Length: 233
Image (tube, rainbow, N blue to C red):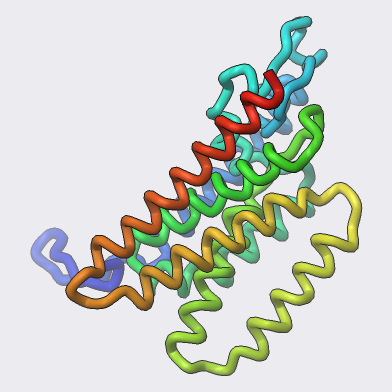
């Protein structure tokens, strides 16, 4: 658990309860700096795209997840389109991710983040136009939000601030153009599902239920990706 004390150089210190959150934020910021330095060729090589020709890559070959580039489902989670995009996402992750990491521990928290991001990417791949690019940590962050809402409910805290924040984010998701709503919805559903299992699993079957749900979400990502790929090719 993230709060378990550990001994370093003869002294007992508490582990950093936000370590994974800090690492994720650091990775996103570092990748954004690379995007600024390298330009569109880097972004187009790693963003989520179903199937399209990417002129910035200097090739006439078709690129995308449908062409076997499944890594785009993962790498797109660490790319961002603008300063506002990356800063708003990282602030959201800091505010919500830190408390969730402290409650879940590092491994389970990272599982929520990555699987939610993959689920959001898979749903985008299935529902969006194949030549529509998508990038950003929003799907993963919505998953963290979904799991955090389960935690708040579990602890019997006041749900009204969480519900209000969720409504605001959903209004922005569906009210503004240029936002991949599929990633937000897919991430939110996956995060809430995994969070429910992690916080409500019976004690005697906790590991089975928790990692079983993680496996179920991952299997859903694989199936959706395979079906969409078969459709596009």
